[in-house]
Each structure stands twice: as structure tokens, then as C-alpha cells.
Picture 1 (tube, rainbow, N blue to C red):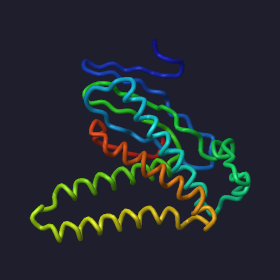
Picture 2: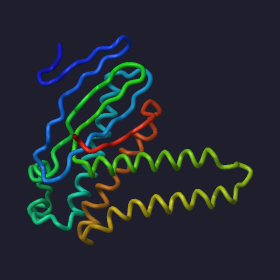
Picture 3: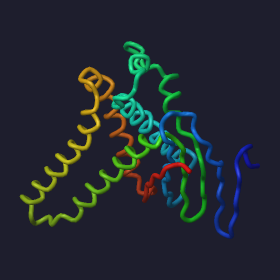
Length: 205
């Protein structure tokens, strides 16, 4: 049984369940993030993947909002010492499941605000690039290996600090670093999942 508002398309070896893209009621552009899927997936492992993605999105969304200098409702957003969840979700709505293609191979797409989705995709790509570079190092060149790894760490730190640099000092040391840690941890978990070989993002039509 297909849920209301969804469409299904079936081919000889695969099926696709799609929910038509609807513009998010938000002042920010909408985007679609696609995760390629390989191998056998249990309900539990698929749920864990979506949980990590939701955590990463929530953290990237908050970093995006706190870093937007045009945001006139920043104090309302922060609500003093507490995040105003309703205001956050009004500005950048929660992730929505957009499409699932189940076959060999498959993919899942989620709809959300474009900028946080780009941040997640960039983090995953960076982690995977670091891992690939480490594998390609000549183990006999230990000293060069250390230098190369130190450079990768510096590049990763520069990438993360660039997100924090847009924040005010009080936000950077509070919500900023906490959100960055959450984003980093969840993005790494997705990057290290060998059943997710590719992650792409595009602007919603």
C-alpha cells in the first residue's frame, strides 16, 4: 500500500517510491540530498543511518542560522539561553523523506534547506578524501606520511573553523562548537558506512 501523497514506479529489478517535491515554506533555498545504498539493509541499520543524517542536519542548520549576519531575529532564535525550536523550524524546516529507490543499487533522498545539506555533503566528502589519501600513502615513507597526515588535519581544522568564524564569539564558544561536534560525529559515521558509497546534493526543483 502506497502512503498518501506518494507515487510508486516499478521496473523489472527495482522499485521507486517518490513524494513530489513541494517548496518548503522558508526564506532559504530548499535542497535534496541523495545517499546511494548498497548491500542488505535491516530496518535497524537503515533507521540508524537516517538518525545520523537528522542529527547532522540539525547541527548544520543551527550553524547556518547563527552564521547568517542578515538574520534579524537572532535573539528570538536563541530565546536567551534556550534554542527556540519553533523559530528554527520556521526558518529552516525539518528534513522530509523525498524518495526511496530500492533495488541493486538503491538510494534514498531527503528534502531540507540547501545550505545545511551542502555542509553535510562537504563534511562527508572531506572525511572520505582523508581516508583515501591515507591509504595511498607509501608506508615506507613514514616521515612524509606524518607530514601529509598533519596537513590533512590542518585542512580539516581550517574547514571547521571557517564555519565558526561567521559566528559571534559568544555563539562560537557555546552553541557553535557543540553543534560542530555533533555535525562532525554524525557526518563521520555516514562517511565510514561502506554501504553508502556516494552522497550528492542538489537544489530542489
